[in-house]
View 1: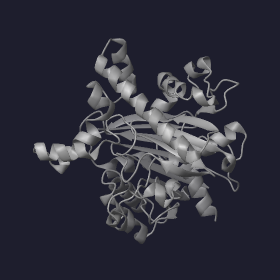
View 2: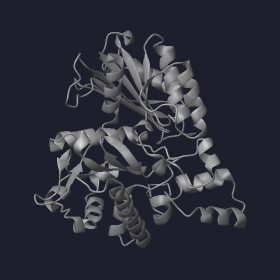
View 3: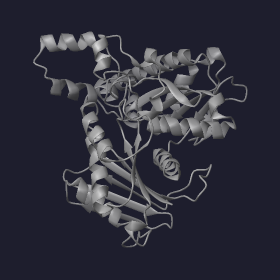
Length: 404
């Protein structure tokens, strides 16, 4: 079975092609073909990079703002030119899409139908940056591969087991009736990391109490018990929770009321302020990228140091909250760009939990660990660094749904 995965972001598009047999493998499979489109570097230019399992590579620039044209060209490299991986696009059996918001409607991966598309479009009200792009990818594939079934894998689904105490906001009850509640995001990544942690530890996932730290440009935590998220930091939108690259995370809502009363702020300006000019970027004045923050700190930049200090403080506080929800902890997991690559962040976070017997192996922490336990031998809590594999998790979801 050949499964094509499309993972769309606001300014990028990642895709992979996997081949699975009748039995779902326990281990991660490498894709036959993988590609990425990036629109961030030059206005009106899409940068396409493709590589195959055979070692073929392709890099080219497309002078177009059209996502459809760029994605069509990307898919064309599957069956034409030096990166040809299949003889015909019709050889693809199923296409899986990451869809950010499934709301209360979809709590598991779902075969895409006109009704599902209509719901994804309706939920764009809650995820205006991502859901329209996810829907666009679905429709592009419909045009290119009209007879191939498509699966929506929702980022919110892994958090669908939250209790009302965890997902209801303490505002007017009418909020809940209007769909305003905690949904949680990064679910595909949290789900993969939880399952991978059980493999690394040689334990059954339902027996583990885990805290997964997805720390990229967007950041979120999940408290996992019985294989499901029981608490998480992102909420109604991905803006809530931890301090992030350019997002503020949770702040006193009274600040927003104050600003609205004291200035000419519009909803659009407020959105831009909180989502694109806050977090590490807003405090440091340097960047939302932790690598550049670190460089600025070495040059004596005090605002960059403050940004890191706030980031660590809020991350520790968030982990403490997740710990209380779990009532104990077997493993703390770091993943995504910062989680996988910043030894400084991992060390600073773990230092705060020495009181519960958590101890890092300093040497392992420094040596770019991948899918590795970096806790000291005598640590009461395991500490794992896991390279998140959202595309593979989407492929697994497609296989399970298609095989049923």
